[in-house]
Image 1 (cartoon, rainbow, N blue to C red):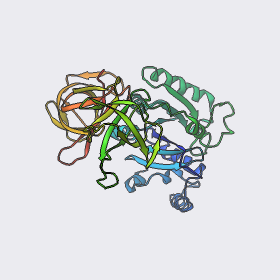
Image 2: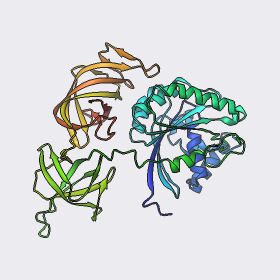
Image 3: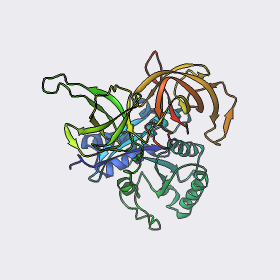
Image 4: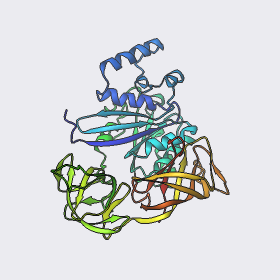
Length: 420
């Protein structure tokens, strides 16, 4: 199977504890023939040891020892699989309240979110949390899987009640494309193969949705943004004057001959050529990683950005950010932090904590002086140098940043830029 040119779909799975997330992923991998025989043998043996009279497909994904002992997923596990139509990366994120930060990590690059609901329990507090985070991170597509339909006798009424309950809640959120699929991950109903037990359901299977959801327009193809990651100077006799700018296109479409502006200097030039893996190409768009050369010798270094002359991002040191805090040590006012935005890294200061968000009611909690781990809050930041930003709602790449611990270099916060 040639997967060289097939599209890559990143999706995240979220559900409450025991909603059957691990079983669902195991079923997807198993029914799409993406499990190696030795993995399957090991799962069958483990299932027998536990005294099950069926193959427990959740064991395919639960790789961490402490998870297997407790039967729960406690970290973000990434899985890769492919079908003839598409390549997939799954971020399997925990359902526990204390792991909000893991869900944000797994969802930040996702095109699609699978939100799992137990047919017997309906909407839970966790479902609200997952739907809110999917909306907050502007994941373009969501599939609500009503699982364990076999335990409610494949009832159409149960399914339709959950659909209307979810729609009532999500009307307050910003999720544009929501599909609903009644499934049984354990029995395999409507996961990869159509269910014979739910003739009343006329929609597509989960796998069909995953293979056919339209994602190429999820990126911003209007605002041209090319953060420079590195400058390529070969220093060879053959290429004495070569100066290429390597990076990933974070928005728009670039073509040789386009007039561009280089930030922070503000100088203008024209794109000479664009190369992908050493071959000249006619256009580059998000999320391609390419090397560009310009007609003029302009001083551009890592952290600079190539944009179109008449479409420039906001250049500012004052940021309004919705941040998810990921560290045991609380974040307080007047704290010095390190932020990384596209290819730029600089010091910054927390000027003000505006409010925290109550994830369950969506209300604002004002008058707070510290943000605890897993809190989501709006803060004002002043950076030590100007950054080239777009609002997160317009561009998920140039509108996001991470906060880094100066001592340990670990990521301690993830933020979405709200500047208008």
